[in-house]
Image 1 (cartoon, rainbow, N blue to C red):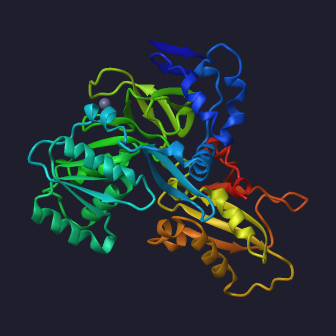
Image 2: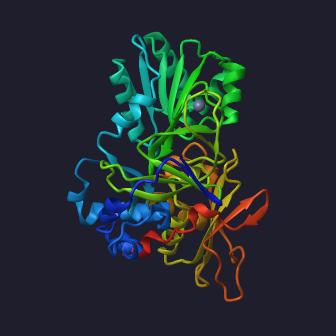
Length: 430
Ligand SMILES: [Zn+2]
């Protein structure tokens, strides 16, 4: 069944949100949001409910961890970023929905040797999920951390020598490996299969594979730390395309993908969660039955790779904690490009005399207070910069200015939908 109400489309029957609403309205920060929908006798319709944002979900999980850990039995929690005072966490059932995912994703065969490469702060649990899928296929696994550029050669030699033919990782790590090998003339002949969790296959990665490594077959598990895995694609699927998994329910509203997970295992059920992904329904060339979704942006980086780890608005209160800082503003420059950068613009109090080191000192303070930012910028320190200035951008006559701006191709823009509900974590946590 296809439901089509103007700009909202979905396939299949919408699940009843009643049980999920009951569970969610027991979480203090979400109680008010759902209050009007839990009162009264008749069961609410999913489509009447408001959408849920990334930061609302983060605050809900943070509250649960601190106030009601017993509600989190059988949960696996993962730090996704945030600050030292408020971590941003993902919560998934301890079995990672392996029973729901495994029947649809079958990359392994007997005789494979599978290596997973973990990446800090990025879907840490996907390494366990990849290993779980391999274990079901009776394939041995070797778990390692993703190599730095200096270590890629050593890793690849080790894999080849030991007969590794399948690799599980994140798309970013996979692409770094591909680029490195393409530039250094390595053909990756020993590697046959790659599995990653995160976004779907994109045209740039596909083109890299077709040009330099045409023997490689790829599988993607589509999802983020917030939604966990909600779709999948295989070697014959179209670019940017995924097949939604049956344990969740997808809607596309005004071109945005919303996800509902009311599965009984859900630690925090999702009701119309805003994935931040622009998408449309599509047909996929692979021939799998059922509708597919074509995405137009990445799921795990609504504003770009840096903001996957750092909620840009976290940085403003961190800077304002310093006595010398009067105003702060975050500017994300050229998101979703190789040149993506994060600028923290600060105005110092009049009595503060800036010297050569002021900007660097503020930068070090923010790096040490923010979880994940130093890792995210380790290989490219220039991607996070503190700019000391007497003026904020888009300053209003009263001296105030927006906390967050995006600059694309030299033009300043208002941030898009994915951060519309991002409040300050500090307001909540203090
Ligand atoms: Zn397909």
